Image 1 (cartoon, rainbow, N blue to C red):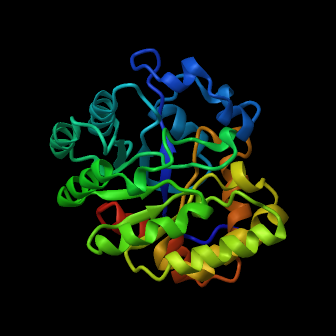
Image 2: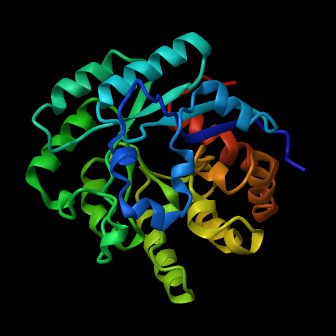
Image 3: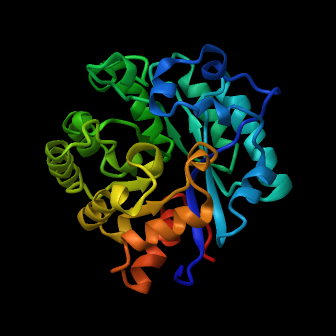
Length: 301
């Protein structure tokens, strides 16, 4: 039974097909079907009313939408602002940003005019296995042009969504330490590449090390995609991540429509809550909503 809390879904997507182009849909990179064989079942028009229908059974009070690989990130953000103005969904948006781009300053200036934009992100996922490479390159964190771009993001006061695998986490420490006033949201619970017992131990150690930076917050999106949908599959990962960071630095997220291919909203929430059944009511309120309200600057309920 879900504790009486207002949920803030800290991560979901929209797809404005055919009005916006999404290269990943046209190109169908093997990395996505390697993650989930039917990943492209979600590659269809997905609007605020579709999202609301999928979360109708749970008490979602607010939500944070995230860019979904549109060819034109500014056009995507403009459309999201229109959705927010017209129907009140989403309440915040994580926009796309290519930090090495010569046009970054202009993009950030456009985002500055859109109240819904509270954060930006760029995939940095890189691994030895080519099929796991969801980023364009593996050297961003040491590239002077990219790091100069990060300075612009920090100056804009935006939250930075950190998209790295757990084995990349040690390489992020210098960046995080250099920008103590910037909030870093580590997505997908620091996505572990190796799900074996040894991999769990390495992930736990790396997560513990990055948690020492107080400006890092952990987001729990994609847990069904990464770990599975059963309590046994997610339990140790979810409990350990929350123990390391604490409920005040952790955020619940659906990762819909992708994770809706794996579980419905009732199953998602009940399974996550069962994994965290030792949390107090105050800790549940933080995890399921209040932390996200703080991070994405949403008004109090």
